Amino acid sequence: MDSATPVRSVYVHAPFCVRRCQYCDFAVQVRKIGDLDGWAAALAGELGAIEREGVFPLASSLDTLYVGGGTPSLLGPGAMEMLARLLGRERLVDPALEWTAEANPESFSLEVASGWRAAGLNRVSLGVQSFSEPALRWMGRMHGPDGARQAVATARAAGIRNLSVDLIFALPEGIERSWTEDLDLALALEPPHVSLYGLTVESGTPLGKSVAEGRLATAPEERYREEFLEAAERLGAAGYLQYEVSNFALPGHDSRHNRVYWEGGAYLGLGNGAHSFTDPLRRWNVREWDDYARAAGAGALAVAGREEVGPDARRLERVWLGLRTDRGVPWAELTPGARRLAHEWEAAGLAAISPGSEPGALRLTREGWLLLDRLAVDLDAALGATVPRGDRAPTQV
Ligand code: SF4
Image (cartoon, rainbow, N blue to C red; front, side, top):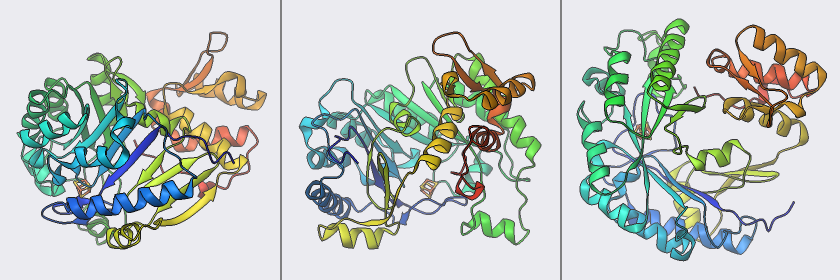
């Protein structure tokens, strides 16, 4: 392993949320106010340990920095400046740096947005999810129907024009919400980037409990499909490119940080539950904030697990990650058996093939993306892999 490869992309987890949403399975610590000092002390300790270890050396200049959560905006206006000091201001001066933080409308004040912008942040991802009051209330979100519009205006007033809006589709049966209306309202805000999340039921969440006890029924498959396709068509017609199964961008506004994940690039994850990767090593931090803060605050690594990605797992990942983006899987990498399968998919409307053109590739259509997991496993099998189905990564549409 080349342990000295400099890492140019960093993810930082900000775990605090005012309360846990119905469906949330993230590494979250419920707090009314984010613990900025505790967060800074833990990150400083972890960064020191990472530096001494030398497996994930930070490059002298970063390409992407992504602060996710949790609710980073709960950490207030000084959070990004504090992060810049920890990571080294000199690493964050490249004009091409993409520096994103997630924010929830209710805690994204002009003071927060301006403080972040002054620190150098240039992209914000807003947790909108819906514009429907009953749907937001059911989810447990803290903002109201007008929260998204205000948050977008706040970002723009602070000079942050590179915005992403998150929307959730396929809500359970009986939740009052018009998906078409939500798409209208989201498009009216003209965000350069939109991410869609198909609601999935995780055991251990309040939603998982409600479903297990029969108090709530998940959306039928047909509605999942209809809402996904409606969004893709509407966004496509409005000029957005679906550059990944769940992500849409106006030209030039792809999330470069996410591209690093999908293309197998190296990245360092800091904070509780964060994952890091430098080929072939993947490792992840302890999930609970208190455990993480104790270890990292004492200057130790807070690693909970690690694995070396072997050739079979790497092939499956490459296929799965390639198929989920608009770049697809290079045609030159497909065996005769895989090419036969690709032609079957094309005939069924699940894929498009561009052999002969440069770069030739197999790409899924929207219908194909609805079957992403299954198609990735089938293509991998055709390529001769022997990876058991249980090793598949989870999908997110
Ligand atoms: S705001 Fe996001 S991270 Fe926090 S509880 Fe809700 S879904 Fe989870």
